[in-house]
Image 1 (cartoon, rainbow, N blue to C red):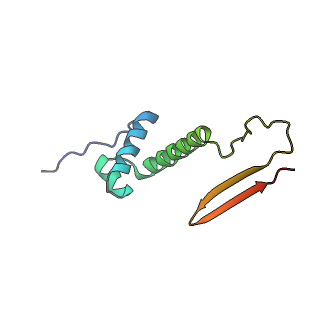
Image 2 (cartoon, one colour):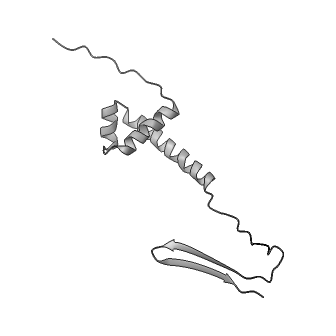
Image 3 (tube, rainbow, N blue to C red):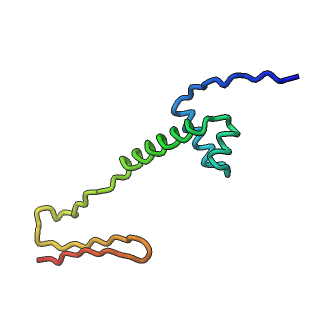
Length: 103
């Protein structure tokens, strides 16, 4: 006797539900394909949502941690004779130092 198969039905998930699935995938030791098979997800749909959510999260991180930050001197505004030092640790032992000597 042959088992009756249930037709695949589309399940509409909210962005929050997709985020939860992506989080579960990130915590698993499974490949993306294996995770999708286990959760009965369409691989292409999961991949698209994962990319979309990763991009959204990266954009959110950029807004909360801007690439450029204005540095203000402590009480030296308008005093062009003051000196300054800036040091950036770039990693792997590389340091960038910028210095302006007082005039």
